[in-house]
Length: 117
Image 1 (cartoon, one colour):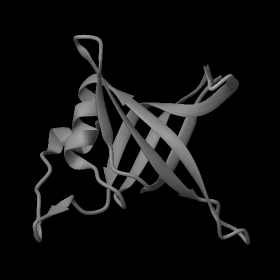
Image 2 (tube, rainbow, N blue to C red):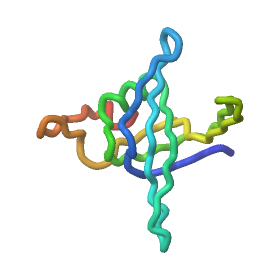
Image 3 (cartoon, rainbow, N blue to C red):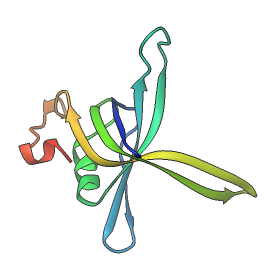
Image 4 (cartoon, rainbow, N blue to C red):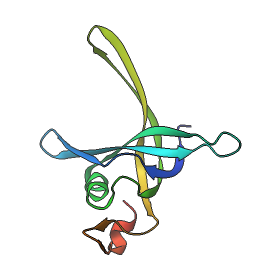
């Protein structure tokens, strides 16, 4: 079974990119508190695809609280002659938690359909 559920705050703004002609991917870093005596946080890379990616890019920004359900995926590549590897979460669901995104001093209303990407 490959299943991950996380709640945390965006540690970066959402980066929306096109992949090919029709696919879109949104990437962001999620800060997840460890809890307990260790007051630190883990920073986890998240990627969301297609319509979910568009909704994340439109409504999320650094500091926003979200819940993410998805699966782990590892990627390998070579950079400057060195093998690199990253493990990230591919989001199947992103729940927008907390208040709406604020822009120019006012609160933006998020339509109900967009509350879950």
